[in-house]
Length: 196
Ligand code: ITT
Picture (cartoon, rainbow, N blue to C red):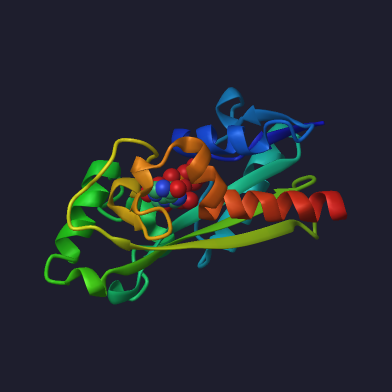
């Protein structure tokens, strides 16, 4: 069976390719099709994941998996949340987003920087699938005062993982996938898929 990965984020593609390897399906990249960018107007991670998966399924005719994810910082009232990819503006990249996050937390001591990554992962059999599979997971940590590490993507250099004793960008990719919000969500989705 073939499935299209409904994401344009190369960091996610890398992690999801590894997480879905060996599960018996051929995972195709959305970039190999003419899939227009989805309008992420949802108010939640789940809604946005469904919008992206529907968009990809509609334009490829294939089953689709989508990941909507982001970082929630408690002292910022849960921001950047569903706006994580564009926190610093419509053309923001990882560096400007990280810079904005450090500035927003400038006056907050280490003890007041609790945060978590969230991931909503959905699987649609086809574009009008009325009972999509949905899995969600969170990964707890806190925001550092300076970046550490060069692995991963996005906010990883600023996300300290207490259970690992280092930043998410200092984890090797296998270890990140073992414990991350995305790794947990993929495993939950796969067990829902095989149990169904
Ligand atoms: P697609 O919509 O095409 O999948 P995107 O990057 O726009 O790509 P999202 O809307 O889900 O995806 O935004 C997720 C953002 O949250 C992402 O750009 C990162 O900034 C951040 N993020 C999510 N998971 C992360 C991770 O594992 N490590 C670091 N940052 C992460």
